[in-house]
Image (cartoon, rainbow, N blue to C red; front, side, top):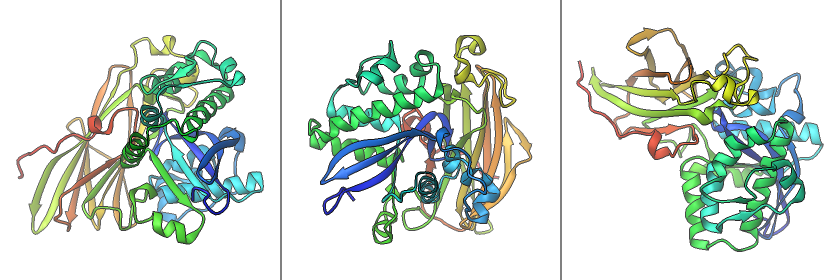
Length: 393
């Protein structure tokens, strides 16, 4: 896959965590990653918006369509509303082939936090491309592990007003970082550690068009599947999809925790608690760029954040109830690959906090529960909290 026998070309989706999608963030910036005997280079840089609308949408399986709508197959920006990366990747590859007339060898994704890990191995990377420097203006011309996330997910929106140019800057910055890797300047041990950490946090995912290669990938977490051998029997998944139509997720702080694990009539009952806080400044509607707040374009007041929280239980489980701040609320209950799925929408103004308790029942698995979450701008260790013990009724 690294081009040992012949050059390989992959669609690289650079996921922007400032606008959440289930696998991480909106794939706003796209590029073709060329790999020839291990040497990396980026080409054919474009944006998801430039890909346009696909009508009729590319089909996905009925279960996922019921949960995530036809938008998964209609817009490149929404292929990863589903947390199942193989579905997102196949759809993105098909869109690229239809739009660009070429079939690529697979799809890779990476987010800015993964790039920060890589920069720990390469050291600071200087932006030398005159075009990217001109677009960036006052932004740092040297990217480091400390500044790359804030630069790409926050400061860039204040410095670069045009969305299309923001994507160009995003892709150009990634190109310089990959160039630092390909040049051999990275400490090999640190680079392996960085990539391992990024995969473990689901910040790097891979899908191959070649069936034999995908069969191998599917045995490991890098495949990003929600079912199969890589999924713990007692896995719970909490995924976030932006409903604001903006870049406000940089300001969201979240925690996910198992707070109750009981047994009744031979079955387990587990409660997963999701706490979300909008840390944006109180005057966000005026102090943040309109492109970041959305300026109310999709019905969400500027400065507020709307999120669709999607909770997956283990295979054969049920989603019984959802409780918001102590009150039971209606929710959407569905299934995906025999896993119970519950979806609830929250909206938070600056400074507001809310808690959702997803109560799963009829759980037959008695192995240690495992939590998987959408990778955000926060360290996963801060998001996934230690299990809390609570009294069972």
